[in-house]
Length: 100
Image (cartoon, rainbow, N blue to C red; front, side, top):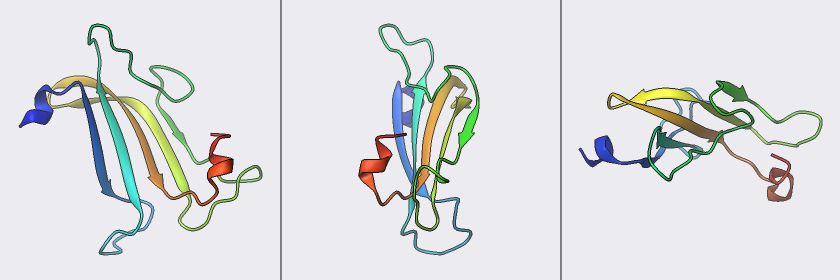
């Protein structure tokens, strides 16, 4: 019930990159930020207010299975307008994650 009134929520959930695996070894983390809070600016990925789904693994970055995926976009959470920043998957080379 307290999540309904929170300005920021961090959710740790099973990954969506590996279908129906059972006990999750890889996690998905969501940062849910309420819009319109005084003295508070939600973080965003690239462009504030846009909806972005990004898979950075490719030529510049090396990712092991199942890879990594980022999401940013507006949503509704307990009838409140929110921005959601999400990271799903795993990243092995932290020195390359600085690129992100």
